[in-house]
View (tube, rainbow, N blue to C red):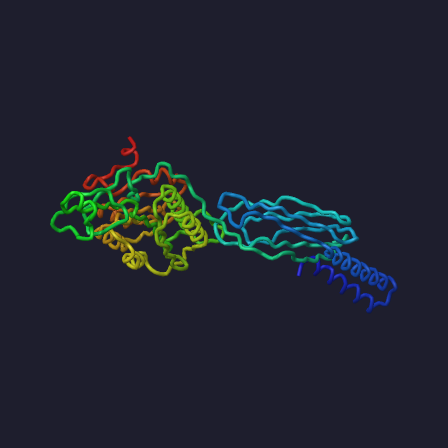
Length: 420
């Protein structure tokens, strides 16, 4: 109940009290006037909401952080009576949503205007429902009516261009393919050579054998069968902030890094998969299609740092789905060391691993002398450190800790030395 309604009820109660208590004609007249004003005001506010036609036109059902939610709102008066003191507002749970607009309409008049809202935070929101609020000329009554049905609207995470992304971070294929003698048969055949002891009979190229009058076998290469995985740590205890209105924390930075990396790898036709241990577990096998980009972005839009299992457990659970043709980029802000051996076990298995470490200290988290970056350096795992306000492209340009893949035994230098 609003303060205005309470004030009207208190005034009405006082008038009734003095009317019945004193019997003065003045109070009777005042009571009649208040009653007439109430009936007229209520009827005015009610009639103002009759005969309205509301339409909201919107082309997209999703946007991206940093963009705008655009639409065109139209209100038309189908009634003979004019409409005044109408407030039209779109009902939405989007943060920092735009305020409504006051309109007045005569018969068969329509008003159209553009509604635009800045998209501040990723997530799944409800939009599209319109509330029209009517008020009588005396300001005594406010009545509201809802039009249209609410529709889901997804806000994708923001991304940053990564033109200087270290190509060795995800072990991207180079211009030349890597030939390997192996019993594994891939769809890509690069050459033919003479049979050698130990070669599988399945690799024999029979037409070429008949032509050369000698056993000839096919050489296979990895080609684009190498797949990239982006693993995002969304354990509840890891991230620095869970405040609803806080959009500058380790959780949001982790999602932004993941989204930027996925978009860049897919632009390079690299099959990319996603694994997240958030409010629920999301695991998507690597794929390089356009549908995959939308699927992974929508997942990153709704995931929250509510995971209950530890990062090392999540890595071990993911291990059966990985092979030595895979690369794993782990994005985490965890300040524990227990997950480093699990990641090192993947590396020893032949999986190319690297870590994008979100520096919680730059977000005001208390420094920890047992930060995992030291353990990562000891295990020669390439580590890229991203701080608050830092360019992601610059952070992923050169690893700060560990050996650079492809240059085993040669320790990487710091960013300034490496660039110089």
